Image (cartoon, rainbow, N blue to C red; front, side, top):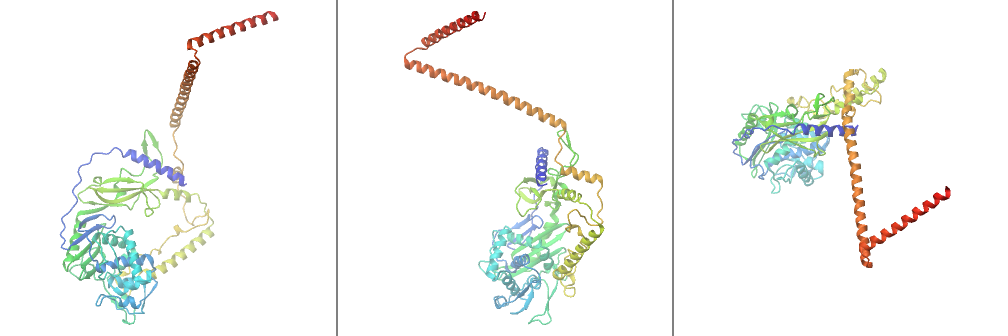
Length: 557
């Protein structure tokens, strides 16, 4: 099966490249939008889906980030820990902070879940929570800072170095708006992070300082409808401030199918709210996100009615474009204005069934990528269609078992992922239950069995899938042509061999002749004398043979 997929993929890719070789001359694409007013020293807005920079100012200059550092801290904790793990607050976690810095009223020896600590970290910007989480994950804040730097490098950051998990002043703790946008993009692509960071309030459990618990709220004013800075479509974000960093701000917003991330460094209050609004308005008003699969024609899947070279390839699409691949374009541009480049450089982070990567550029600016993938649905469906239905009793047993497991998983996930309704009214619908209502389609069934109630596929569908699994059928006329070409090639090879052999024999004869003449000259005999001597011997030998044959004739007569 693997060899078949590779053969089909290679053939179809070559076919599509040949078909797309003849392109039309395109008109000049409209200019990239510009003209944003930002008062902060550095600002940037990017498309969260593709990572494309829509606009930027001093995006690689290094600044102190302050508490927006905690976005990276939260991302690493979510990637490394389970939300129900228990975190114990050490003396260092509680007291190794600057006096008067933000905190959530947590004391030495208190125990909170990772989930509670994350809410305190992102909503209340609690520095003791940052320290405690770092110690819980890495053993110390210094070791955790090493993890932060390693993760930043993985994300492509080149202007960043972290020295602590909270963002407090340190000469070795700095970043840029571009790097911070990369970090924020990775964080907001994480569903758990987005759920926590988008919460408008949360109640922490009781502890030694707050026996009744503590209700906390986010510091990002654009998330709150009660403030004049509220911005419709805000997903979440993080504020920061120190005397050296000034006001820093990370914001994520979603509107009309477009998800943007804006970052402000070295700003001032209240101007940095206006700067962020200007960046988001610029992005939403000037750009649109489109699915590449809806518009791509050069590398579109090979359809079943394709005619190539006069031969019809009656095959289903074995290669498809990634349905989730998107690019970002100015609203004044067309999809055809983007220049597509095909690459076979597939990394481990790319989809498992990807065979090639298509990247798009607009006026020398990369605007997104998509993938050419093997159509796994064809092969998986065809393989499952060969399974023989089992008896009703066994099917029902397997179904009930998997449903029970699914319900148990659903119950466990709800307890961890969604805050209690009494504590977070707006958080009830933040994360849909991944297990609730799940069908047993992904369950593992015994060999030669299928779930009860699965309907038999139509014969046309079965034939269609079976054709996809068979190697490509070459018409008889093609075989005749190929055979004729092979015969001509073989005959040509034979003639060439005979000519080469004849030439070699001629060369050997001349070589031997030259050697003989050389030996005669060395012995003092001329070539003419040698030839006369040879001729005399031949005449004598011929006469003797004739005489002998005449005697034998008389004897037998």
